[in-house]
Image (cartoon, rainbow, N blue to C red; front, side, top):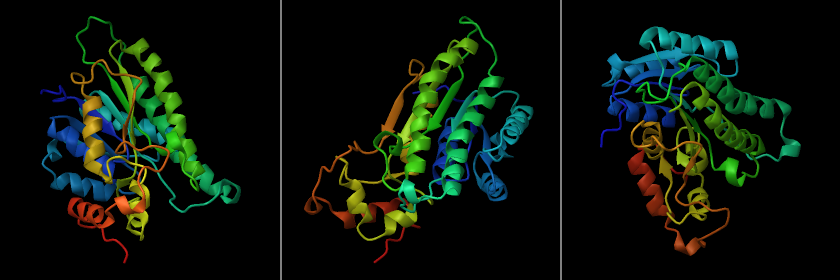
Length: 290
């Protein structure tokens, strides 16, 4: 199937991370041109792009997503390079990981998480929407696409990580509001979100390596496995497609193995060793604690 992404320009925030890079690779494989964002990892991201098969179709831009002016400058730089931006993937985010009740959580941690995950998403979406051209229904365009990367923590909550859960839950409101606003500029414009569950990345690797963590994590999933970044990227590429997903907007696609807010399996029904072997095969850097 032709996904209609060849020649499209996609702006991806947090592209230096596992999911962000997998998204970049997935879009590039479909022929898209890329503006890849990082904050402190711009040099390493640029080096990685230079080694990739799509180095001639990608540029690296820097921004602190907490600061509106740097986000807008990054979009201006990307437009100077490519002339237009058709797709925006709002992926940059942080997760402190350490479990801590809200009553004990420092104000600095709460403010930092919300600044990156929520305000960063708002500033990125705003900068993208402001540059979407005003079109008419019959102009033959493919339609702009804005896509957020959320989390099942925003749906089910996550004890000990109220800051993260709140920041991701707020994205529901953005998706369901902006789907109605984008069409005022572009009648074919779409806004959606992918909602990963536990996914093996640099951000979660340490937590998933702890004894018993895998068993506890998959106990709420019919599909007893942990996602890897490519699982999320494939869903993003589908939703970004102006052909395969042209009539999909305002939707949240959950990629979490059927996760429910309740325990589905007891310990005896979970083969933790097999799951850890699968993770190590998908990501050789994964090394469980003994």
